[in-house]
Length: 499
Image (cartoon, rainbow, N blue to C red; front, side, top):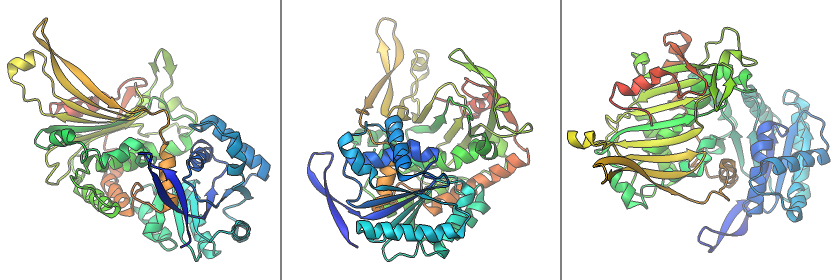
């Protein structure tokens, strides 16, 4: 391939050379919300940092009859509204000049023929090889027909490389995910498919892979003989909002559990003392997913589902899920999910993992809590000694905290105290910046590989079937609360509580 050398400063301030092929970036859904909120700001920040190709053609596709000028105005507005750094007037025009808009109908064969000619014309104009990255920021039902039509019309037939970025959801159950993957792999090889999960782009999640190795103090306590349980929480204060059309069919289990939470389980359990290659990380994540004990019998003992009812948060009255616009009158959809699971491998054997996610909860937070065994004697417990915690906060802030017991000499009583480590987040890359940079460079480490996706659906499938058969109660919980009481009981049975 014709690589272009791009110089930049690494984190230590040392000149390094980064290789990035010149390419065409074809964005399906260029007028959509995701493009405006995430993709354009991410591309701009990568451009400012010298992390995009020297020659880049971005072709935005949409049905609206935009001119190039209108399209550029939309991009400028997205940068003004959502970019983590303000647009530099001296560099903005050069950035925008990489973008062209193409009026496109995904269900019309002629659109694909015209698109092929447009891409090739732009490649010839700029002088770049036919390396093509296709980003499908579209409705899930369009992923398969778009991919097949691109193949039929020769758009994916390149002498250079081709790659496909697919947004979640990747299927709606095991069978649909397997069907979709079968169709996509008729056009793209597995190493050409980048299934994007923005949680894997978050810096703290990526740091999990290397958190223990350079920190002996953490290595010494990240010991299965000391750990009593692991808790992973992804809570939201918002309701379903304008996404009822999608969410009322997916629920929390499809929207958050099958992808985000199970990815966090894999990344948390990815304990290793040595540096691993991208392939080794993929293999170990797959092995972790394979080790998760299936929940097939007595599902109700390990899984809790809920739906928010009217309540209050910070004094504001909030509607219940059934009162939200677009929610079906007879909806039995879950807006909350909690589960207890076990990893049947040597390291994590018999250590419960508790996962939970929900909408309209009291706090917005994504965190991982490692709770250690409390080996205090009865007298120390009476004096207030509690278990130590290692808290890894992913969102909205990024930090690592250690909870220890500190004695108050005035009353001979112990009080929990937190030692917190964090870094300056003022200029922290957004998740989409990390992921787009990796995809443009062909690095798939922090994307969901098919083996992980299929195994996660296999674990989820019996639970979906139990939901559809109405075998599990749908617990109500007040908006603004911490979720249904049944989720608390899940941990109390084992002598624990949520942190």
